Image (cartoon, rainbow, N blue to C red; front, side):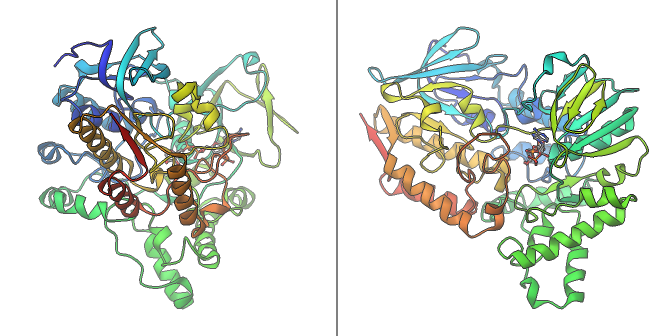
Length: 535
Ligand code: NA7
């Protein structure tokens, strides 16, 4: 179906990633248009096309649940799908559900202003179009605004610079090149072994080493796939009842100190070999709440690293020692530690000798210079708030979102912002975000937001907002949950500390998805508690 009038619509959706695509489908009975900055759909899986990009959740879980036939028809060739397969899936869904007519590709939203007189958002795109819309659904992604290092003299560098989240569609030929990779988070660990195979020499610039589990990726076992397909709906329901909306795992029976040393080692060895992401984090009941239990698991992983990496000094540098395991995203690796046994790979510690700037021929640290042909920034994202902050958003009385969030984001249920009526977010600040499997939790949030819109229309209302008091209550809830875990001891994109000068506390809801969902439902069921709806 074509959009009746693109200058005046019911709903603008920003972003055609997995959540945006589902929102477009779920809200299809309205006059809805979706603006997408990329030339294609898929969001994260459109942009992050660096070598080795792969989801770290099993694909049978990380897939849409709304289309029961697709669930049966689609076959994932591997347990953890690569970027190309996920992009193919996003395109298939866009075609299958005839969503393309309503998607405007290569169209970045640059500003939005709420017109109080008519209760409409005026949404402006980079191409100069202005669209009036009653609602805006921001499916802008939690990890979509790339963070590039702020070092000076970038323009002097005569080689090429790439960010992993903006990797060229046609790939990059790195053979015979001296390549410097900055960053050793989930992305850095995936891309490095792929680069090492192509390049003349790879310098891995590491500021903070990562805890990583061996990848469990392997070709899909047909019997395993059949078992999922036979029980999909029950399994999806069970997933929604788990903390992270993920496969139901056997939960630990004991705290670490309740086990003998031999039992502890046997449990950890089994978790290490489990081929399942995150098993280390639930090896014992108290890994994420007790420092001693966490240290036991952390030291076990360090010993594994020491056992893989031949050079003891390199191994020691690769061992994380400054934060608890799992307090930032636990990475999945595929030959990353082994890679440091290659002759063409050098680990550079930029914690002790920081990078201070680009030069004509490479990168300068405080004490050295590295000659490079190509620089690969695997430096992550201005996460959670970054994509929204890059749009100029003006709410009631011209209030700017950038100003409102200058000291950190404030939200009600992670969904609405006081003073910004009819603007609804998916994977907004203080939602379970990266603590939950994002595709299924995104689908759930789309349904929640769609219910809010449906009930506004059913009741003939014009405006929905939230209050500063509701934002304060949600901040208290988020803080109360964060207090109980070891996450608070670590700087990462979870608390914005990966970006110099970024303010705000813990930006992820860590109370678990079931509690989040229950609080959201309860607020709406309880006469829209925390919201203000008006005619
Ligand atoms: P991350 O996890 O934020 O990792 C970024 C990496 O880049 C990390 O090692 C950073 O070191 C490093 N970094 C960033 N800026 C600099 C500067 N200026 N100098 C040196 N090193 C720097 O992003 P990813 O893309 O790997 O993963 C994001 C999420 O995607 C991941 O959590 C999964 O959910 C999927 P730092 O640790 O800050 O010292």
